[in-house]
Each structure stands twice: as structure tokens, then as C-alpha cells.
Image (tube, rainbow, N blue to C red; front, side, top):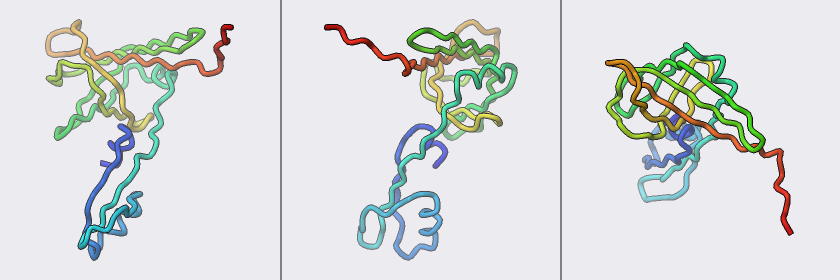
Length: 155
């Protein structure tokens, strides 16, 4: 759960009895006591920033498998078929094309993916309807603004 919290940027909260020996484990995971609720402590853990891979990280991984994690299910293997990076004046763009089994989710959504070289990260991904029977293509488009260019003020 902490990996998912970090990748999605979502806080975790829990109640634990004050005399429960698991309390130290929660503290080591980054949970801090926020409230005394009688018999329980309410503890919260803020997400730790997950490192989103750079756009160029993907180009060297074409032909390798990524694990797509679906809630309550075993990971699904998606193969990266194509990674195209374009550099513009104001932004860099990356188009990623994956192939894999139909995950029975017809909409674009944010999914947790992992790769042995990149670790875990969240990616906004959606199905595309051009794959052969039994397979589905999925596409992600990533845009990174070029922060080194400053806009000129107009009088």
C-alpha cells in the first residue's frame, strides 16, 4: 500500500491500538501519530515523492515488459512496443505504445506500472483499438514543459 500511496500521491491513514506491538513497524514505514482517539492512535503517512522516469528512460526499454497492477488482481504484462520522444521549444513529448491482454477497462485512467529498471510509477494510460484479436494496444502521452524558457512580459 505504501508503494501505491507514493506512486499516486495519496495519504494513508490508520487507527492502531496504543498497546499494539505493530506500532513501531508503522512508525518505521513513515506513519506519524496525529490524534489520540481513546484506545487508538490515529496515524497518517504522507506519500513519499515517486520518481517519474525521464522521457528518455523509456526509449531504451522498447521490447521489454512492464507490470500493470490492477486492484485485487495479479499484475498484467504489457510489452512496450514503441517509444517516441520529440523535443519542442516549449515542451518535450513522449508517446508510449504498449501491447498486452485486454484488461476489460475501456477508459483512460491512471495505473501503477513497474519495470525492473525503472521501479514503480503511475502512468495515465488508455486502450487503443488497432491491435490483433486477443491483444489490446495501450497508449500513454507524456508532456513535460520546458522550464528553462521564460515567457516575456508584454507591455
